[in-house]
Length: 134
Image (cartoon, rainbow, N blue to C red; front, side):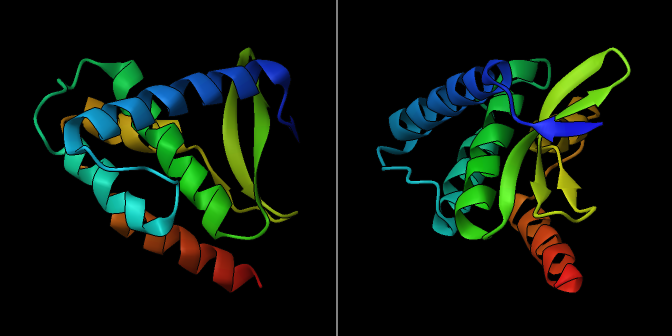
Protein backbone atom coordinates (compact mmCIF):
# COMPACT_ATOMS: atom_id res chain seq x y z
CA UNK A 1 0.00 0.00 0.00
CA UNK A 2 1.20 3.52 -0.80
CA UNK A 3 -0.01 6.49 1.23
CA UNK A 4 0.98 10.16 1.45
CA UNK A 5 4.24 10.64 3.32
CA UNK A 6 3.76 10.85 7.08
CA UNK A 7 5.44 13.07 9.63
CA UNK A 8 7.55 10.15 10.89
CA UNK A 9 9.05 9.58 7.44
CA UNK A 10 9.42 13.33 6.80
CA UNK A 11 11.53 13.62 9.95
CA UNK A 12 13.70 10.65 8.91
CA UNK A 13 14.12 12.09 5.40
CA UNK A 14 15.07 15.50 6.77
CA UNK A 15 17.58 14.10 9.27
CA UNK A 16 19.26 11.93 6.64
CA UNK A 17 19.28 14.76 4.10
CA UNK A 18 20.78 17.21 6.61
CA UNK A 19 23.55 14.75 7.51
CA UNK A 20 24.36 14.10 3.84
CA UNK A 21 24.42 17.81 2.98
CA UNK A 22 26.64 18.59 5.98
CA UNK A 23 29.02 15.76 5.04
CA UNK A 24 29.18 16.87 1.40
CA UNK A 25 29.84 20.48 2.39
CA UNK A 26 32.62 19.46 4.79
CA UNK A 27 34.36 17.16 2.34
CA UNK A 28 34.00 19.23 -0.82
CA UNK A 29 33.64 22.73 0.69
CA UNK A 30 30.87 23.22 -1.83
CA UNK A 31 27.22 24.18 -1.46
CA UNK A 32 24.55 21.55 -2.02
CA UNK A 33 21.22 22.81 -3.33
CA UNK A 34 19.60 19.52 -4.40
CA UNK A 35 19.74 20.17 -8.14
CA UNK A 36 20.91 17.82 -10.89
CA UNK A 37 24.47 19.22 -10.84
CA UNK A 38 24.76 18.05 -7.22
CA UNK A 39 24.58 14.40 -8.30
CA UNK A 40 28.29 14.63 -9.05
CA UNK A 41 28.99 16.00 -5.55
CA UNK A 42 27.19 13.11 -3.88
CA UNK A 43 29.03 10.66 -6.15
CA UNK A 44 32.43 12.15 -5.30
CA UNK A 45 31.77 11.78 -1.58
CA UNK A 46 30.42 8.25 -2.05
CA UNK A 47 33.52 7.32 -4.07
CA UNK A 48 35.94 8.99 -1.62
CA UNK A 49 36.55 5.78 0.33
CA UNK A 50 35.72 7.48 3.64
CA UNK A 51 32.69 5.28 4.26
CA UNK A 52 32.81 1.53 4.66
CA UNK A 53 30.18 -0.73 3.15
CA UNK A 54 28.95 -1.47 6.67
CA UNK A 55 27.86 2.13 7.35
CA UNK A 56 24.30 1.61 6.22
CA UNK A 57 22.87 4.87 7.57
CA UNK A 58 25.50 6.92 5.70
CA UNK A 59 24.70 5.24 2.39
CA UNK A 60 20.97 5.57 2.95
CA UNK A 61 21.46 9.26 3.77
CA UNK A 62 23.21 9.78 0.43
CA UNK A 63 20.18 8.08 -1.12
CA UNK A 64 17.82 10.54 0.56
CA UNK A 65 19.91 13.46 -0.74
CA UNK A 66 19.64 11.90 -4.21
CA UNK A 67 15.88 11.63 -3.66
CA UNK A 68 15.70 15.35 -2.91
CA UNK A 69 17.31 16.00 -6.30
CA UNK A 70 14.71 13.79 -7.99
CA UNK A 71 11.88 15.72 -6.30
CA UNK A 72 13.37 19.07 -7.32
CA UNK A 73 14.21 18.13 -10.89
CA UNK A 74 11.21 16.02 -11.92
CA UNK A 75 7.83 17.71 -11.69
CA UNK A 76 5.36 15.23 -10.23
CA UNK A 77 7.89 13.25 -8.18
CA UNK A 78 6.83 13.21 -4.53
CA UNK A 79 7.63 11.47 -1.27
CA UNK A 80 5.24 8.73 -0.13
CA UNK A 81 5.12 6.11 2.57
CA UNK A 82 5.15 2.49 1.43
CA UNK A 83 3.53 -0.04 3.75
CA UNK A 84 4.72 -3.54 2.89
CA UNK A 85 3.53 -5.98 5.52
CA UNK A 86 5.25 -4.98 8.73
CA UNK A 87 7.77 -2.72 6.91
CA UNK A 88 7.13 0.96 6.30
CA UNK A 89 9.55 3.23 4.47
CA UNK A 90 9.83 6.46 2.54
CA UNK A 91 9.91 6.25 -1.23
CA UNK A 92 9.25 8.43 -4.26
CA UNK A 93 6.35 8.06 -6.66
CA UNK A 94 5.90 9.88 -9.93
CA UNK A 95 2.41 11.39 -10.02
CA UNK A 96 -0.23 8.67 -10.07
CA UNK A 97 1.89 6.24 -12.05
CA UNK A 98 3.53 2.94 -11.13
CA UNK A 99 6.98 4.62 -11.27
CA UNK A 100 8.38 4.19 -7.75
CA UNK A 101 11.89 4.75 -6.41
CA UNK A 102 13.24 4.01 -2.96
CA UNK A 103 16.38 6.16 -3.03
CA UNK A 104 17.80 4.93 0.30
CA UNK A 105 17.53 1.30 -0.79
CA UNK A 106 18.72 2.14 -4.29
CA UNK A 107 22.11 3.15 -2.88
CA UNK A 108 22.34 0.81 0.10
CA UNK A 109 21.30 -2.36 -1.76
CA UNK A 110 24.22 -1.97 -4.17
CA UNK A 111 26.87 -0.78 -1.72
CA UNK A 112 25.85 -3.36 0.90
CA UNK A 113 26.52 -6.08 -1.68
CA UNK A 114 29.92 -4.62 -2.55
CA UNK A 115 28.78 -3.16 -5.88
CA UNK A 116 29.28 0.38 -7.09
CA UNK A 117 26.36 2.74 -7.48
CA UNK A 118 26.37 5.30 -10.28
CA UNK A 119 23.88 7.99 -9.31
CA UNK A 120 24.16 9.60 -12.75
CA UNK A 121 23.17 6.31 -14.44
CA UNK A 122 20.32 5.83 -11.94
CA UNK A 123 19.11 9.38 -12.56
CA UNK A 124 19.05 8.85 -16.33
CA UNK A 125 17.24 5.52 -15.90
CA UNK A 126 14.60 7.09 -13.65
CA UNK A 127 14.17 10.04 -16.02
CA UNK A 128 13.61 7.63 -18.92
CA UNK A 129 11.00 5.73 -16.89
CA UNK A 130 9.21 8.98 -16.07
CA UNK A 131 9.31 10.16 -19.69
CA UNK A 132 7.92 6.84 -20.92
CA UNK A 133 4.85 7.25 -18.69
CA UNK A 134 4.06 10.69 -20.10
